[in-house]
Length: 341
Image (cartoon, rainbow, N blue to C red):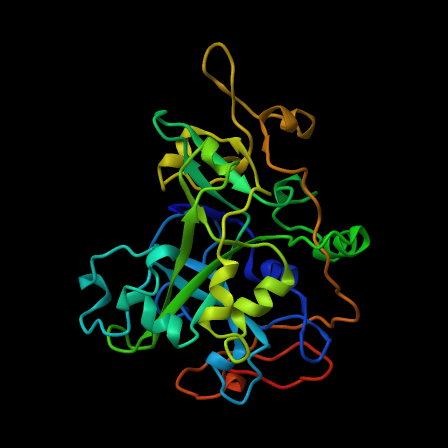
């Protein structure tokens, strides 16, 4: 399962780390950021993000503008914990917490099956997620795929160009952020603006994950897998559900028990936890990290391109428009159009 995760990076940093090559045009594209939750609950960076908080997701641009190709991506904010389209009361009146959906039954339950059939698939981005070791009290672990970005200089204000250059140089095919497969729905009844909300797809734990828990998020590990999961125009449900499998290529280390309280929101949440003989927490340096990592495979950096991408600036927002131009502007050579909300 996934009940807590970390994303201490600002949307613009996440956006730049989400640079991708469009599968149809072969162009390197920096996706626009659209704050779909701006009037409800704007995204806030967090190293302890619980259900019902606002998270960052990738979706196909075609969900926001029918004239867009389904292979084009946008980064947007959503409520983490799905509120189905059929709920007609206020948001506060909806009590179920649907932060996870089991892949084994995703096609059986209308709450999940309807958005799945409508192609409402998303990728929830994080630095990593937390899980508590079963049958051991107050023993949380931080689980991730690529080396934690907290090790980067000036974190969380990291040099994304440098990271992407290193990824491109290493040419290992990995992603800079944890990409969790999810589905989303749109409720147009319980808020003034449409409410976009999502849930994380979960699968049985891999052999590595079983060290801590019996369930885990369905992790997408390559740009190709993200392309297929998001591109509902070319890949129907039957073609993409096989992507949702457990992965051994994850790493983890124990973190501070204080992460159990959602009030504890500090970057030290994702640092390895060391207890001395007096049970005091010691902040380890980078050289001591390996002593606390449970490895499936040694980590590798992802492959991506960030060539000739121009810097963009956020534009004023307005609601109620029908095309993606009403949300944001794209930062690509071929699509230098203005997008306003």
